[in-house]
Length: 242
Image (cartoon, rainbow, N blue to C red; front, side):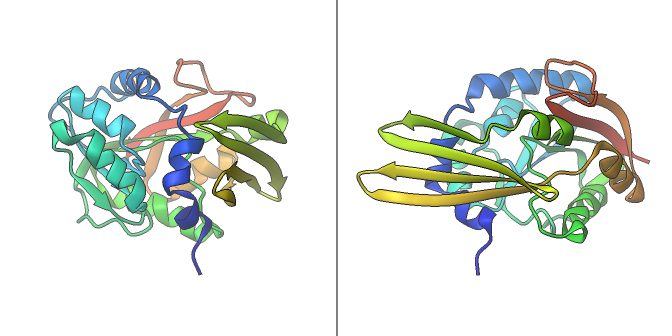
C-alpha cells in the first residue's frame, strides 16, 4: 500500500504548488548563503529537493550541489528545468540516504520536508542520516513549520482556480499532525490527495538533533531574518556536527 507522500507528489502537486516560484527560491538561497557562509569549496545536499528550485539557484551561484528526492515526477521536472547546470539528481528515501558517511559539507532540508512519517523513530532516522552524511563540523539548515503558529493560524478551508482546475484545500489538526486534504476538480473529474506532517515542538526538535550529534547555533522565524519565537511563521534551525 502506497503512502500519502508517494501518492501526493505527482503531476497534480505541480499545479497545487505552482505559486512556489523561482524568485522565492532565489531570495531564500541568498539568505541561506549568508547564514551558512557557503563557498565554492562546499559540497551541498539539497535533501527532498522536489522540482529543484533551490538546487538550481545554488548551482547558478557556482556552488556544488546534489538534489535528492523520492518522487520521480518531481525529479523529472527538476532535471528538465536544470539542464544547463548539469546538477546530479538522485531518487532516494531520506531515511536511507545512498551516500557513504561524511560526504557533504552542508545538508539543506527546505519547505517543511520533515515529519512525513507516522513514527518518531522514522522521523528521527532522517536526522541520523543527516548527521551520518555530514563531514566533521559540517553544517545543516532545516526549514520547518512552527507548531504554535500552525495551530493558531490554521485556515480550515481555502479554494482557488489554477489553469482551469478548481483546487480546494481542507486543513485540520489531528493529534500531533497537521493534515491537508486537497481536492482537484476539472473536466477529467475529481481527485483527492492527503498531506500529513508531524508537528514537533522546538524543544523536541532540539532534543532530536542533539541526540544525534547535531548542535543548533542559530534560529530564525523566517527567511526575512526575524528571530525565532513562539509565534514565528517558520522554525529555521541552523547548526553543525559536534
